[in-house]
Length: 430
RNA sequence: GUGGACGUAGCUCAGCUGGUAGAGUCCCGGAUUGUGAUUCCGGCUGUCGCGGGUUCGAAUCCCGUCGUCCACCCCA
Image (cartoon, rainbow, N blue to C red; front, side, top):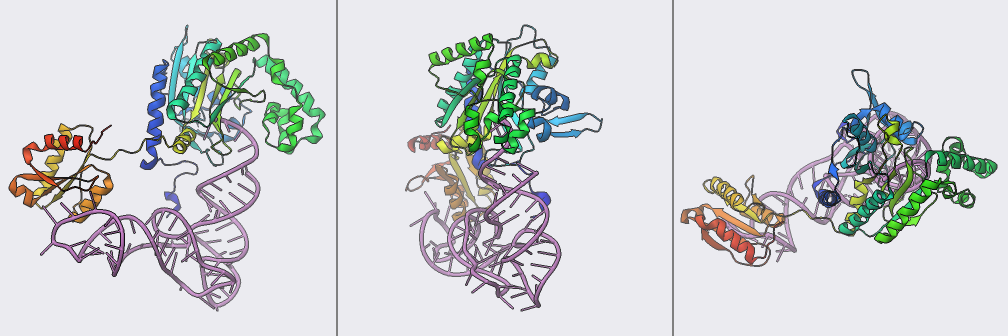
């Protein structure tokens, strides 16, 4: 195969065999978001590069080395969105939605990051992004998390658990960051190369290190929780009380930090042990400072992003994915007169039995071939029209899902007869 | 960006220490001149990822490159 016919690295096709799980997730989560009062909005896939630099943070990995950035023919620097929150915040500002805002919004679609692909990580991947804007209290945080818990329940996905932390205000975090730097600088000799590099840029990331050699050192480090400002402490305590009241179980991980700079106070992550190294399935948190930072009226907000490919994998493992639905009837036609007539019959059946699925044999083939296709289509009934039947003004019908002989019925009675036979075969549509 | 494993038919794979490719499956036809399983018979498809090197000779050895998978990093 010529190289130019390959898909771009890390950008995958979703084939019919896998689309059932995607549609299942989209239906269930779409319904759930409606139940919780969230409304869909759609924002562009491309934004000004500046938006992401100012929101995600100029010195994050995403902005420094993972964005698809290009100059358009007008000379503007544009970027394929690496995440959706920034675009939603921008949309709320530029459409004047913020005055006294109480917005509950969601969007879904492709995101782009130039990373090395691996299990659960792709260069074009898909997210649901859910945002509550204009709600300051911990009650939204709790409700958003409850929404997640209900989603796993409705999907029949069990291997996920919730991890929770509070980052405090940016001032509190800066203070903590200083303390962390002092601590790790004192033990610099014990650090690995990666961590030494993070020491200046982002010492919080050292806490996330998977290097077992650093475990003891990290456990001895100052804990973010001890540096929380009083208001954040109360916010977090209230959230925990609400989650306890809702029966949502969680563990607190004081070392949970997010890779995007705009988070403050509540951060959470639903993680799974069934996905390999990329275990975060859905994560988010509060970003009270983002909107004012982007030039909008100061508005608190909280939200999460859910990785569709990763959840689809969990659905696949749980075996709760929707199977593709076979047609109810497969129409077999043989003969110069019968073929055009069969096309008409198929249309008549589609008119009379909407939603049932009537598949017409296309492209000819022997009777044997057509029957094999009928069988493999998974259809409940084969409808047979040859010139012999046509001469008698009849059609033959044969159940395919059990051993049974075929019967004939007069052409005008066909729709009623098919409906009756589908009932007798206890064939369920939907 | 770094490391490891792997690229052979549409799909799953075999091919030992170099002698220019094979099985299963799928698809098509027939046995059954109009009936889906199974069985039997027959048929179709390969620039052995790509480029270069070593050799009389390379799917096999070497180098490069592209891609896939997994991990690091990072994150959904």
